[in-house]
Length: 98
Image (cartoon, rainbow, N blue to C red):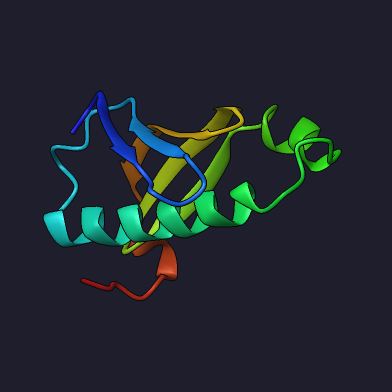
């Protein structure tokens, strides 16, 4: 799934997958995609002049889904990019969802 773009109809945002995700179970990819869509929709509602963008666009963010930790960033307004995926040892104590 590396290099795949997923355009969102609402807000004109794109989710970009910049890392290999072949080891991630397919049901978790569906859940990851849903969570990233929700994040993008929330970001689309933030005013472009807000100081929130200074923080969001400068840091790597993390999302835990079903025993995996995904790194993502917002390199520019309108793009959410997944840049890393690693299993959490023992699921990190998180309940597994499929």
